[in-house]
Image 1 (cartoon, one colour):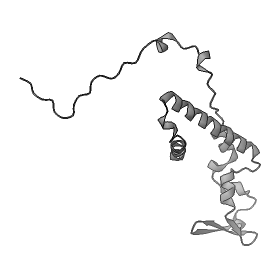
Image 2 (cartoon, rainbow, N blue to C red):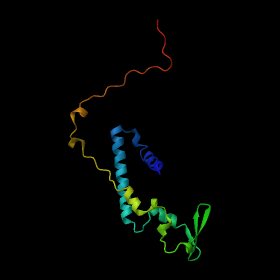
Image 3 (cartoon, rainbow, N blue to C red):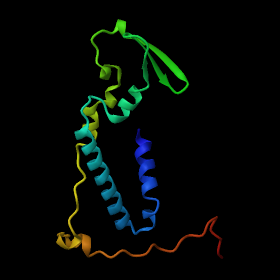
Image 4 (tube, rainbow, N blue to C red):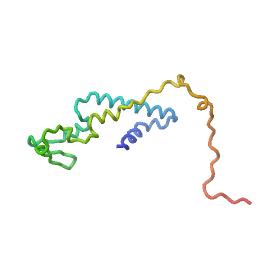
Length: 147
């Protein structure tokens, strides 16, 4: 679950990586802010207890009789007998990770917009220091012995 967001950001940021660091960070912040907004809108439009992805997976369920269903997952097929599981909703067969509540909770914390730099009160101990270039590099290998 954690590599997907990194892969998504790497894909989106591939052109922005050429920008200066501050611009790259701002681009990343805006991108994440848009994603969170998009997912919150999607969650608000969802009327089911399951997320859109889980509903897509649930559509792979093929009913045979009222109680007997086949669930297809790629080349694998599973038989589910609902006779042994009475009065259960379709969401009861899904992991809680795919519930609408967890989906909403994942995107509940907003990424706040940042005001214009001219309106920011930057303390002098941050704005005054000047960055010096790094010192000379040591050459690779063992240092030469001098007499």
